[in-house]
Image (cartoon, rainbow, N blue to C red; front, side):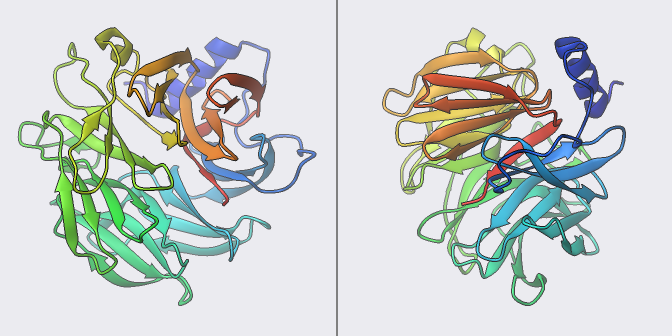
Length: 358
């Protein structure tokens, strides 16, 4: 079977030919050395790192990771970043994004694994990480005290199995994309009975709202919010290969899920998987590395307005009302107002997610 790493490397060679060297995190120094973006990356066979980049996605520095990373959380005041291991992850790595200095390598607790994502509380006091209980996939939000050296002080649970991404809303509530899938390693075991949800917890870890989609084969995984009250969730479809349901939905607490619109053949381009999502007041952008594309939707009409090819389309963030999109083939796309597009090369084999230093 072709591994995900091999797929990325072969894809990059096929698409870029000899125009760009096959590199991971190695790059020339950028003229602008102000850290603005952070993402995990692949640095050759079985070599992984987190990369700090400037606002144009150009390399500033890297931090070696013991295994493949996934999501990154950032703490602007302390200059901390946390790279989370890809599920079922065995570590998270805390480092200073200004210097690259390692602060803490935190292994998963016994009988626990990380799901690849985490986020700081709005006041920066806590780090929240999505975790699972080995053997059952019981969902856990690990709560870590930042000032106490990332000591684990609590666990929130009771919202389902297989959580993936967690975000913090402006009112301090946590929102969790609960995939609903029980796994052994990365092998799914309960696809006929899976029960995904979008779950809201208050700051004390109490479940205050929980909604799902009509199709229980849509595993809710990746999240974003628009800076206000709207949550965006991206799904992985675990049903019939020939079916192509909607993979994006919007939600406001207390209301129903609202699915974004596209034609079935357009959803087919996403190959059953949404990796990263970002939103402005007017637009929503979502990527699919499996589909080698990204899409842009109007928040007002809920309709797809652009479907664009991008090899191994990976992370997306909003920076100064501009979408910044990364690619596992090294590309960086900047889109202002979803109309003006600038494409450049970073020479970095970006993984699925980007974080912005805000």
